[in-house]
Length: 258
Image 1: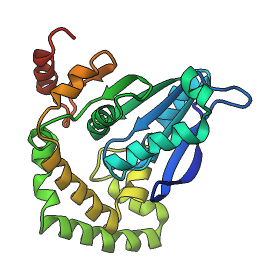
Image 2 (image 1 turned 30 degrees about the horizontal axis):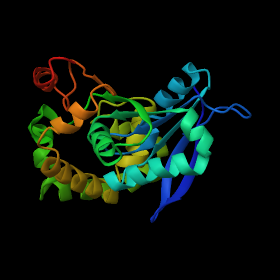
Image 3 (image 1 turned 90 degrees about the vertical axis):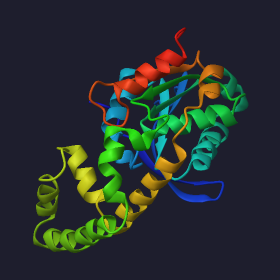
Image 4 (image 1 turned 180 degrees about the vertical axis):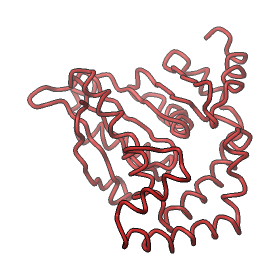
């Protein structure tokens, strides 16, 4: 069993209603480690709540862990500043280790945080299946290209807008079972996909995010990686369609000493 998060809504430097999951050390314990987890797409924290709860529990609750829903790179920097300055005194900021952990697109955001916050007290960054460059050329990027451009994106979003309320009216579980026919998710992930992601406005927003990703995430930021090499730990899988092993080999060739 993992830790159950507290669900909070933060007002962060103009980003009102920031949806946050917080896993805190039990009072009166003060944490030895603060971990900020940066999500991959589609930026829905509920995909990660069980995973993060298990990490927190494994650390024997000596850690505070936070994650927030996706908005922008600037939003993540503002959230990190908010966490540090709102929840910790100046003395605690000097005493605890701050760690970033990211999945997929969140890894690209992490590099931007390291570049823009070079003097922040960040001791380690764990990048899980990182998308750091050429995201549009990955197997998943190529496969998804037709879905994020008109007319398919509008047809898909319109189909969801009609089908979801109809099936949900018949039975709340029927829509979830229907979604399960088309996606590989099961259990908690299927519940999140059906109830949080597959809505007309969210699908349009997700398509816009993907278009931005393909335009933005092209060149590898070798300078930032080099300047922070001692902090970075990158994990790749053998079957991840967003972070293929060829990208791992490419990065290793650029940084053979690591």
